[in-house]
Image (cartoon, rainbow, N blue to C red):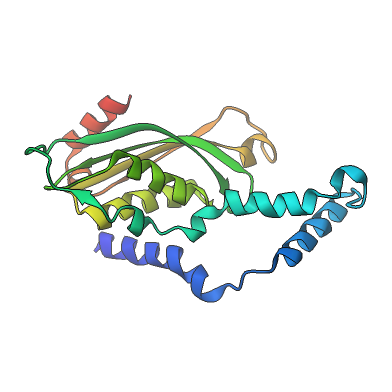
Length: 208
């Protein structure tokens, strides 16, 4: 039942915005940036800020490019010629940067991803690319951790997946409580990793 609920929530997160949201034009996006510059107390017509609205709109296209990519397509190709290998596959220290959905400030961290194959494996770069896709969207760390895990579980159907993310949130470091260097850890376990504490411990020993 937990996996059904998780997959339903994931589908909503991935697809609802495509049905309900009409993207503004480039001109509307630049006008919004000008409004924010005025609201901050600066003059968008001064020399240093003349091109800022266009630059910000362009940078948003890069920072949030994950909305235009489908993780299922990235994970669609798998390999069955693994010479009988059925032990853990771990991809460590996948560096990423994202933005929190509450303040639109950076989240900077690393992801550790592992799975237990069940006859098929993924190209190793695909795992890093999936982390990157979800990172290039507005996020909470908890959601991103679950999204990566369930995307791999749904596409590959391994015996289990585990995702561990450790990240620093600039919304804590730059504003509010202003605590630099504080990091947050989140994990999602599926299948054998969720059911077997020994597999969890083995994963932790490898990534630590």
